[in-house]
Image (cartoon, rainbow, N blue to C red; front, side, top):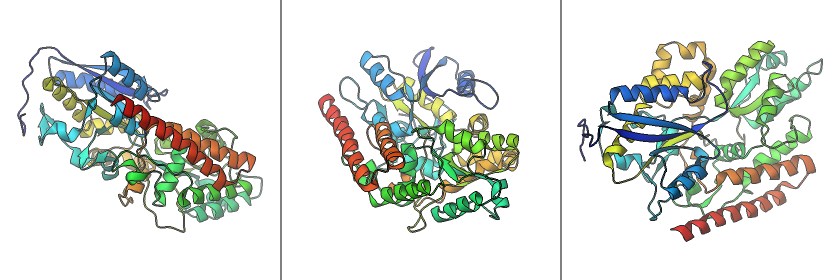
Amino acid sequence: MPTGGQPVRMASADIVVDVWFADYPFRTYQGTSFLQPLRDQAAAFEQRHPGCRISVRGVDFWDMAQEVSEAVEQGRAPDVAGYYASDTRMALDTRTPDGRPRYVSVTEALAGRDRVLGEAVVLDDLEPAVRSYYTRSGELLCVPLSATTTVLYSNLTLLRLAGIAEPPRTWRELRTACEAVRALPGGHATGATWANHGWLFQQAVAQQGGLLADHDNGRAGTARTVDLASAAMLAWVSWWRQLHADGLFHYSGTPDDWEGCFGAFAGQQVAFLISSSKSAEELVGAGREAGFEVAVSAMPHNDDVPYAGNFVSGDALWLADGPNRVKRDHALAFVLSLLQPSAVAAWHRSNGFLPVTGAGQRLLEAEGWFARHPHHRAAVEQLRRSDGSPAALGPIIGRLTRIDDVLAAAMHDVLVHDADPAQRFAAATATAQQIVDDHIRVLSTTA
């Protein structure tokens, strides 16, 4: 295989690369469909590479793993597939009908080259926490496209009225700030809110250096044992429970109610919201329309233990293996083209996912983007505080999205039915362990 900048000669005048991107039910800030910026990048790539066509298909991000699995069985699987971060283990475990891994690591596919069909390899410029999330045994598994993490949104106008100068950084500071805001005359916001969703549990455990699974959180091998009742988990759950019991946490009564939490913050029912950094533009804009200033800062962490880090979510592009190296190189070159500075900057400006490369960030800085939109700085700044441990990088577990549901159901019982945290999350662990066991059992029968 060629090295350096030597291109691979096309064996055919018509190379078609099938790319399935994760699709979402919202539009870009420019008003186009979510995938339009990527379709534009595909068209630009085709102009640079005559004879190659990038066939783009959008697949609901919830359904990608299942859709690809079915397509593999039917012999119509894509050359590139965009999996959500929580489905990383599902991508690793996807097999061809003859039992081989469906995907090749980007490191292996590159084989030491610094260019592929003229497209520069800039993987070393990826934001470290983003690159590390998808790295295993020294190999980059896939190419990150979209990245987000959890951050804190604060109604800075209310904080100032309450005599608080800056957003809270820890659990204790958040509680104190909630109490100060509630004490304001006139019945202002009651405190804080966030969605009862498994991703936030994972983030809180990661911050404390806790693990959800064996084998270094599933990063040193397939996770076979999970623990949803660890000391780190119960510290988060118990603190949250007390916040709610004291009237300082707003719970709509429905798990996964991201929209309800957004509305409670925008309507100033609460002064604080923990949510995805992807929502920064929308939440800052909602505050502006309602007449209050929104600050974006790091997700508060446990005062009583050292901070380990928060990890990324979002989508990454996985490269199918196969005997046609010419086609695979075109697929790889297209994926690499999405990491060029102009593409990274355009993707960030379109939807608010954090810019995943240093060059992309520098381009945005030079354009004055961050000076005009400082709320987009918080996510990257938080990620750079990570200690890079398996805990801080987050878990890689089979059928993690189903475990998210188990966590949310357990917390619902704690908040609404006053279930004992230790007992309820021990029961949740048993349920989650069955999910993991079932996943491994299926793998063993298909290997």
